[in-house]
Amino acid sequence: MPIHYVFLIFAIIAETIGTTALQASQQFTRLWPSVVVVIAYGVSFYLLAMTLRFMPVGVVYAMWSGLGIVMIAAIGFVVFGQRLDLPAIIGIGMILGGILVIHLFSQTSPH
Image: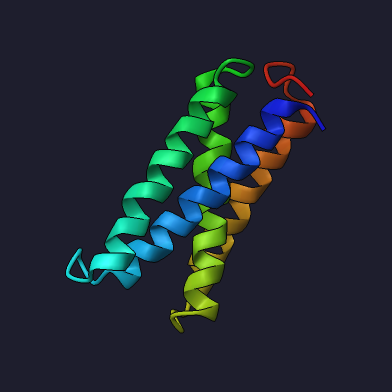
């Protein structure tokens, strides 16, 4: 696997951890989840910057934010009991479809 995809995968994981901790921080009123938010987003942005050495910002940001949305929706469902209605599920499916189109067919993204 190319190193830029490793950077991007770990950036997405760190962003997902940060966003999950943001929910757990209860609007930054709990110390440790708030600390996790700051550290996780710092790591995520650093890895995102490393990815930008190899890929265009539009493609990187689309993949980072799109996969982050999908992962956070899944964590929200499993951990926080947050339910999505059918239009939300369809929209998230469209986000995944867009990421697949970029990855599989775009010549802009190095493979």
